Structures are given as structure tokens and as C-alpha cells.
Length: 473
Image: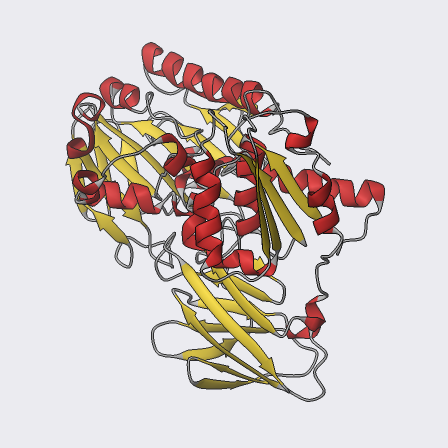
């Protein structure tokens, strides 16, 4: 199957293109009744980048990958230079962290699970062969199953064999995805469970530091499962997928937890050590609702615009909702419901994500889906916990759980007045390059001065609180 990011000007693979690709793959498996273990991934140019990205993000889904004429990381490909000045900015660090899922080189060890064939023309003047050589050098440090070929004199496209290359498909024939029961060693890395949570029989549900890198290593030794983790507070071990003869003992970071044969095990570290729990707490952050503002646009989203403001405010919020919907139509071939706050019925849109265009003063849907949010936006002010920011020039994006659902989220695009509303207009949250944490609050001056006029940025805590979150001010 060949997803093309839905349209010629589709999303980058890092965001909704990623979702589209995996949905198309799942549909293709059903339609063509394929053998799951014989699933392979290849692509050329931007498709080659998608190959690097999807391969590192979902390492248990592909037996082998073959990126052609490609770049591994879109940031590294499109921008060069020293970010040291930006790195020192407290808000930039939060924004950069929110884009960690696109940093393929930080997740590189996930490639260990797949065979890798790299093909690149040595005279490529569109994507430099240096990108391929970088990955040859990178994989050469730890990977024992990759092949590399530079096509002599090859430009970016030197004929159909730029991707339809027999040695690639011959290489694919040597590889198959193992059954989960035969996987005795797992090393898995992810930037967020919201993007990639599962690898064979290990599922990361929650991070203590949202959108920072999480790493797990587990080995099956007889009836013992021994592992260590970094930046993981809740995970599920699908022990039912393993052929264990007796009740297993899970040893994680030196702590032993008794399991039951044939039963999955969810364990949690709330700060006082690891222990088993009956289930994942869906009121907290977990894999199906882990935040990052951009995730609010997933899950069959509906856009709800304000009608309770002035004539100018109402027109602006309506047009902003329409603009975002048309962007999805043009770039993603998606038809998004756009409704007024008066027409919005929470039951009719049950368990769907909602984007609120407007604040609590002018959008009647606010109280229907955001009843307990600790960040409150009204005309003339934003309340962030006990802190109050005054003015009509403040804008915000944030994401928070929809209180009447265990899976749905609410995203907010709002201002405290006309100036604040218009400050939200310029930011392109539909780009795969950009990172948006759970919360951003900024003044209208942000449009001309940049990072110095961001007032608040960061991530809610694992319990969706401000107090246990990480915020820069």
C-alpha cells in the first residue's frame, strides 16, 4: 500500500500523516488479508523520510525498512546552524521538547528491531548524500543488520530503480516480524505514549515528564521478566502474549512484583516505588490522552466557535474555525464538523475531541466540556491556577481532558480580547516541524518580539494539575 499523506500538499509524516499511514496500513491488511509478519516499509525522498520516521516510531510493525534518497530528521534536513541562543530560552526548551517525537536520531536504537537498507544516489543535489552517510555512520555504531548502497552518478531521481531496486526486495525476503511470544528481549524508546506506546508485549502508558524521552529494556529469563526504565511512571506488560510455564516474577529497577500466568500486568511508580495496580487511571495522563496541544486535533475532532461575543469577535472565531477546517480539507482530505457553541450538543459528539474557538465569556460550549480546567480564559483575563494575567491582548493554546469522557480531549484557541484573539492567528500548529506543549499563553507582542512575550509554556502534571506540572514563566 502507498499512502501519499492524503493529498499532494499533505501533512508531514510526523503528525497526521503518521496517523494516516498507519490507518491505511491497518485497512490494507484487512482488505488484502496479508501476512502480518511480512510487512515492509520503503519510500523515496519525503517518502524515504517517512520510512525513517515510521520505522523508528513503530519498530514492531515492520520486518525491514528501506529509505531511498531521504533524510532522517526534517529539522536537521531543513535547517542548519547553532541553536545555542534559542536553547537558553526557557520557553524554547518547552516548545522543542513538545516536538521530540520527530527527533528520529534520539530514537535510533529502535531500528535494532528491523533490517535497514539505505539507497542513495551519490550525485543527489536535492537531498544530499551526506544524509545517507550520516545514517550509515549512526547505524554502524550499534546495528548489525543493515545494508548501504550509493548509486554511482545517481541524481535525486535516476529512473524507476531509484526506489524499485531489486536488492531492496531481495533483502526484504530475508526478514520477518517475529511473533510476540518469541520476543525475549525488548529495547524500546519513545518521546510520548500519545505517539508511540506499544512495542510487542510492552506498553508505556504514562511519563512523569511528558514528551521527554522514555526508555525501557526487558528480558525474559525463564519465568522472570527483568527490566529497567527511564521516564516511565505507568506501564503494562502483556504477559498473556508470552508462553510462560508458571506465574511470572517481574523485576523492574530491582523491585520484584508477582504476576499471574496468562494475565497482563499493569505497574505504577507514583514516586514511592513500583507496585501493581488494577488498571490504568484514565483520569490521569495515559497513552490515549497524554497531551501536547496538537493531539487535540486527533480523535474525530469537532470545531466549536463562539457566538456570545461582539459582532467582530464572533466573526473572527467563526472564520478561524473555518480556516483551520479548510486547511485540513486541503492538506488532509478531511471533512471536519464546524458548529456553533449554541448548536453543540455534548451527547451528540460523545467521546470526540473538541476544539473551542473562544473563551468562557463568549463560547457557551466551554462549560459543557471544560468544567474543571485549572486554566480559565475570559474577557480581560487568564487565570492559571491562583495566578491572574490581566489584559485584552493575551492569547492561548492549551489542551485538557474532556471531563465527560475517558478518552477525549479539548483544545482551546482563545484570546482575552480582540488583540489576544488575533495573536493566535499566526502560529502554524498544523506543521509537522513545530512543537506545542500542553499550554502556551502569550501576548500580542509575541508576533513581533518572539519568545520574550510568551507568558507561560509547559506541561500539566501526570494528574493534569498545574501544581505537579512543569511550566516556564
